[in-house]
Image (cartoon, rainbow, N blue to C red; front, top):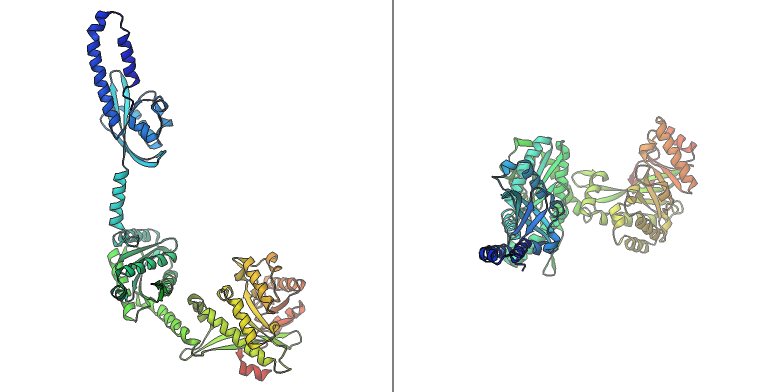
Amino acid sequence: MQKRSESLNELRDKIIGLGEDSIRKSYYPKLQYHIEELERFRALLDQSREMIILVDFNTRKIVDINYTVTLIYGKSKQEILNLHVKDFFPQKILDDIEIIQRNIQEELKNCCIVEVLLTTPKGEIPIEFSLQKIEFESDTYIVIIGLDISERKKAQDEIHQLNFYDPLTGLPNRKLITQNLTQAIENSEKEKEYGGVILIDLDDFKAINDTLGHSIGNELLNEVAYRLQSVLERGCTLSRIGGDEFLILIESISKNLFNTINVMEEYAFRVKSIINQPFLINESEHLFSSSIGIEIFLGKSYNCENILKHVEIAMYESKKSGKNTMRFFDPKMQEAIQDKLSLELDLKNALSKEQFCLYYQPQIDINNQIIGFEALIRWIHPTRGIVPPNVFIPLAEENGLIIPIGEWVIQTACKQLKKFELSEKTENLTISVNVSIKQFQERYFIKSLSTILSKYMVAQDKLLLELTESIFINEAATIIDKMQKIKDLGISFSMDDFGTGYSSLSSLKKLPLHELKIDQSFVRDITSDPNDAIIVKTIIGMANNLGLNVVAEGVETLEQYNFLKKYNCKYFQGYLFGKPAPIEEIEKIL
C-alpha cells in the first residue's frame, strides 16, 4: 500500500532542505507532526472500501485518488493521476460534473448522486457515485466517492424476484401479471384495441400429487410452463398464478372483435393441443388435459379484478362441461367454439366408424374421353350429413388427424385403381389424390406409400399425388428431393391450383412434375376478364413448352371449354363434365 502522496514527499524534501539549523530546529517538529497526521489520514483513506477521487474543478483533471480506485480499475496510481475526467468516467458522471459547473452556487449545498454500471477488468460492477464541490483555500475541487453496490443490487433483485415471480417455474406470479394486466387495459383504452386472457387449469392435477408425490407434480408444472411458453408469440405474457393454474395475457390483438375472437380461439386450441401431448414421467408416458377459460377486454370499461373473475368463471364452466375443453365468458362467443370442439371430437372417431368416403370427379381429354378422376374425400356425419372438406380438413391439420386420414385416402384410391385394372374399359384410368403439407412432410410418408403400393400391387403410374404451390415456401430443396424419391417409386405429381401460390419459373423447372392444374379462379372469368385470359394462355403455353400436361379445373360452360381448346389445353375437369360423385354413380357412367 502506498502510504505517502507525492505532495507529502515534496513537503518533506522542502523541510530537509531548510538552510539554517535554527530554522530547522524551530519548524521541523511541527511540520513532522503534520506530515505524520497526513500520513495517518492517507492510510485511513486507502483502507476505505469506497473509491475516493479528487478532480480539479477548473482543469477537470484527476489530482488524487485512494488505493481502492487502483484495485477496482486495475491501474496504477501513476496511470490515473492527471487523466482528464472524460477519459476516465462514464457519461452519466460527466453530465453531473457539467451540472455542478453550471450551477456553482446551488451545488455548493447539494450533492449529486448517480448510479452507473462500471466496466472493469473483473467485469461490469454497479457503482453509486456521489459528487460534491468543495473549496480548499484558493482552489476548487470536485470530490467523487464511489461505492460498489453489487451486494445491494443482488439483494434488491432477490427481493424483486420473490415478490413478482413464481419460485418454481420462474414465471411472473399473480401480483406481477395483475400489474401487467392493469397496464394492458390502459393501453387498450388508448389504442382502442382488444386484448384477452386465457386461464389454464390442469385437470385432476391433485391426483398426480397424491399418487406420484409433489416432486413429480413440480416436474409436471415445469414441463407445462415450458410447453406453454413455446406456443406464445410477441405481445403475450405467461404467468403461474397459483397451484396448477396458468394465465396468458395477450395484448393489442385487433380493433375488430371477430378477429380477436379468432386469435383467442387459436391460442386456446394451441394450448389445449400441446398439453394433450404425452408427458414422460418415470420413463413412462402419461396423458393430461386442461380446462380453459377465455375473456376478452377493450379499454377501461373493464377492470383487472372483473377480467380475472370472468376468466375464472369461464374456466370453471369448462371444467363442468367435462374438462379438456374451453369456454369464452361471453355465451355468444361460445357457440362457435363449442361447435368446433364437438366436430373435433366426432372427427377423432370418424375413421374407426368408417364415416369417410371418396367422391370421384372425372377428368376428360380433348376428345371428350374420361382419362381419370380426382379423388375427393367426404365425411358422412350421422347427424350433420355431408361435412365439406373445407370444414374438417383444417381441423384435421390442427390436431394431426390429417396423417391417418390422408393414408386412408391413398389406400382407398389404390383399391379403386386395382378394380379399374380388372376391366379393359377402365384399366388405363388414373386417380389423383390431394396430399396436405403436413402429410407430405411426415417422416414415414415414403415408407407408407411404398407399403400401400406393395399391398395392392397397382400400376404406380396410375396414381398421381396433387400438391399445392404453398408446399414450396420453405425448404424447397428438401421437398424436391423427397418428390424425386417418390417419383422413383413410379408415382407422378400434379401441381394443384397453379398460379395462386409462390412457385417461380426457376423452381418449377426443377420439380419432377407430370402436370399442372390451372386454378378454377382463373378459368371462371377467362371469357370476360382479359387478365385471367392472359394468365391462362400463359400457363398453357409454359406447361406445353416444359412438356407438362395441363388440366383446367372448374370448367362449367361451353364458352370456357372452347376458349381452353383454342389455346391448346388438352385436359379438363369441372361441372360441365361431371360433379364429384360416389363410386357407385361413377361406375354407371363408365
